[in-house]
Image 1: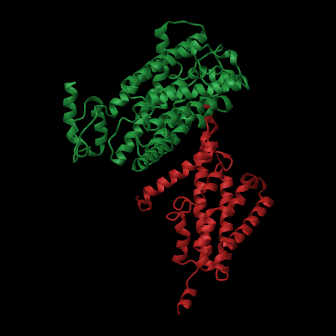
Image 2: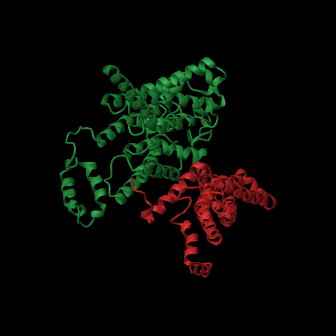
Image 3: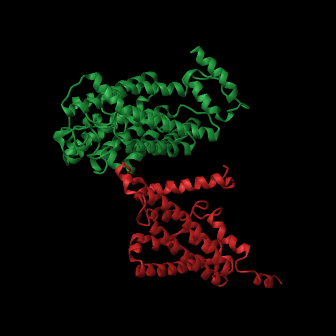
Length: 218
Length: 381
């Protein structure tokens, strides 16, 4: 009975869409769960690497979520972490090779951080918490949702950092050259890693201002 | 004064609960305490109070800063007119410096107090005097020609991210005034360090670096004499040039008990010890610079007296203060001599030790507990 009903469930049911929408705001991997901070600090000085990083994480996370979800009943619980790591590592190497082949410049800018997607806490977290106990399609949606939530913060931070730090967006000059004649200077601090941390902090601050229930009371 | 009191009494009901402007109560309160002693009494808790409250502490530091501030204004004029080869008299020199400094001081206070009042309104706190000293310290430690919008940004950064996010005055980890300078230092390095810093307007004879900048690139014959640096007839930021004036301020702070002599002393000792160590090593020209020169160059004296002693961010235990100050002095000289990117080490040394101050206190308290436990065990035996 119940199996029949589940099969009839539409692909984009409210439940499945919630898997995508949740991580974008109220369950955001960076600002609420505080995962994957390291790469958020490292690749956000410019927008282009941030966008490429977002897409890479999305591909890796969605694909490994699906693979693990398919294998979930065959993985012995005691070695599940190793299996998850092998799956992630495979996906990361694939993405890395594709980037090297088609986007060599950006792959150089991202340098080791594509390889370090393997250690991104978001991936292990989602595989362990979601893919291990859900069907492939919801796992896929969950992967897309979390990568979107991650990417949204990455792109927002890199937008601010590139605009104020270099005066450009995606490499295009945004601040009018006339401003520099009147003594405007790009903010060198925005390029440095500490400002990424502070920017993420400000985003968390704003988010908690609008969603009071996210504030822990201690 | 009476008329003012009557005016304030008349306006007061509007700002109390239920009045027209009840939302702006904290702003009214801050204006009232500016002129009169508040009529508030303690309603609960401890009833024993010291006569020294935050307002008196702040005003004492303010007075202690005055000699350095006024001398600095004169010095700006002195540097300017000397570069033109003129000598228009001391009053004109002072006036010139005053006009240079006034915009900085106004911007610093307007931006800083504006943000403080805004946060107080949102959080329903009272506005306090926390920004009073910071607001004058910031213009004193930046170059006098710093673009005003950069200064405003730095003050905003320091107040919001240095103080308000931690919960306001008394809760901050880092010294807000130094944080403002650090912001400028990293965000707009051209305007605040290196050889393009403003020294005097035309300044062919003076163009180039402050003594610290000269020392860093090896122009040791450019360094002024010890006497000139002690008296402060050297180019630099407003507050830091004259060690003599800073010493007068230090005396005020120590006599009134506001500033802590332990920290000041140990910073100086730390600087001298590190300087002597370098003298003994003597691997390059900078290391051979006499150790006592470090005390009068750059912001060392100013930092030791007015920045390191900030009661909120310094170590709190007596033993901890010695460690804290000593390390500040050592690290400041270390950065000066060793790091080619940072001519002045005092700011970074103090900020670094601000972060470590709670840890130092923790270690000192912990050691004391262990010490006493041991004594107790011996007594029981």
